[in-house]
Image (tube, rainbow, N blue to C red; front, side, top):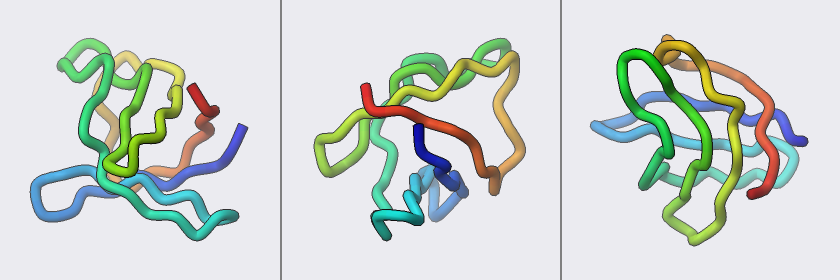
Length: 69
């Protein structure tokens, strides 16, 4: 599992992995509703990660754990 930083940028969410110095745009989230947020995250570079679903959308910026999907 990796620590990742999520932050809101010009209309999209940025997914940053500090250890790899990789920052990509999130193109899709498995769960993106007011009552559930997270799950499988697809990035613009084609990679995918899994974030444990939260009960509500988080306030960004936020650091959390993610694993490769």
